[in-house]
Figure: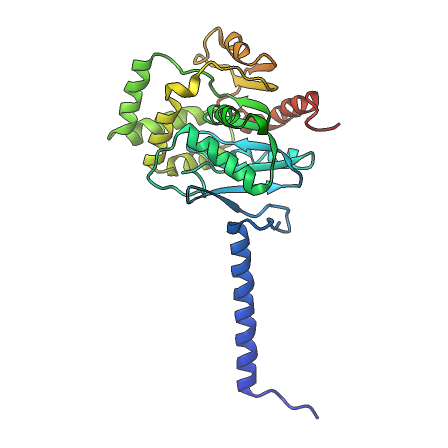
Length: 308
């Protein structure tokens, strides 16, 4: 006849199981933050990873394998989730990396200067941490000058650039931009930013999606939003140096774009595929994801970044 374990033995056994479970959880969290290969959930979602730039953590997720990747860079006060309808469409064709720029999403948000230069170096820190040597970079809105600055600093790592409703030169007059920045810096910040965000999101018909993006943008700390907007207006970001890699521009038709926008884009990027879409707003990859994915796929195929 077997003997039942004593209460003391059961206590020790349960304690051991609890400690072991805690250890497994801690190791998994350490992996996500310290550079070990990401783990996927049952649904295939990549685990969070963090690169480091000057002591600050930059959050990203990586899908697939290989040293060549398609990299998605979000815009002002957004995060990687604006690309949620692109990631699964491309992660079965090539490696995909999406990140939260410093100050955004799950990345650290210290009181520092959020310049386009910082953002470009943050992208490079992510690629280095992920083991990516070459990338096609897709930048939405503010992400456009970010990926262009990345190309300036790391041309050997840049296969191609995709500009999604983002500018390659400043809008309007310098004095008007400075007046707007003064309002953003001051007590009117919440009113001005809320109105601007609501205007950008108005064309999105899915109320839940619109509310989610709005919530993300308004949750970005003021010191990040103001500094990043100042960075977008820095004159050195809009130098007219040439872009000598394959490029694609997909813009939403808007009165903000001058009549010579296509001509100007082509003057900077000789190997440019230019599209301007009607019936969409600033977040065109969210509003028309299938059309956007087809356009991006055609660009990748044309330049042999992916295979048929």
